[in-house]
Length: 251
Ligand SMILES: C[S@@+](CC[C@H](N)C(=O)[O-])C[C@H]1O[C@@H](n2cnc3c(N)ncnc32)[C@H](O)[C@@H]1O
Image (cartoon, rainbow, N blue to C red; front, side):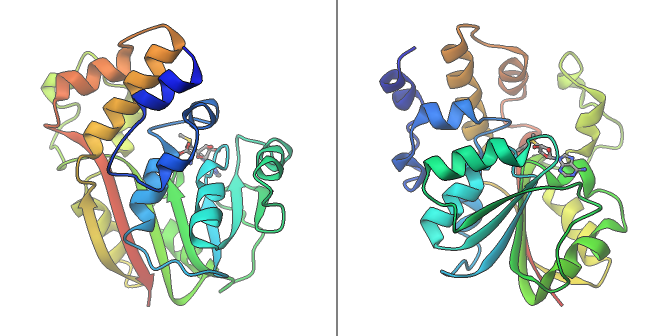
């Protein structure tokens, strides 16, 4: 598929800022439901101001870090485990953001930052890999100033189920989807610590649709239409799956 066709498949009116970025760039660095759309969905409910220091935790290919730096003028520490910083630095240099986006290689439990360093910490499609532990927020929230913002967005269920998987998703379910939690679950998970106040916990409006559009575009581009994740989303038809978004501030 050529780049123009891909751009057409990835047109999405809900994300006007993302429309300025090439579909090929998004797909080449893609590691989950479009990181750039998700960064825009988080950016629209956070107060990001030029010059703020932002941690992008689990940034993958740093697409969201580049997007946040360009769109909001923030300085970003693009931190990830699986993707090496030299690879991300190449992308950052291509975007001419070497002074504004800093690629860091770190495990989520061994972060090389000073306490109270960040104005905001965000995590896109990643926090559920390390943040479901009851005690993790106590560690993570130390890196943001008091009153500073914490934002996450990732796949999640509309509501919690007594038993998993939901019956209609049995053919597609993988065991680690058990970390896909609902907005209400995340709200309680963070608020019960008393360390933060949750300002917003929602299912991203039309997030399920975005996720499916993204998968279908990637599948068509790869020449293997309707792979398993797209099949799962079709079978679900927004009953149980979506993108969970949470914004809080440190107490
Ligand atoms: C599904 S990818 C999403 C990447 C990117 N944010 C995106 O949306 O395309 C999940 C990311 O979480 C990161 N991650 C998972 N476990 C981690 C851990 N324990 N410490 C640091 N990063 C971790 C991985 O390195 C990976 O890049």
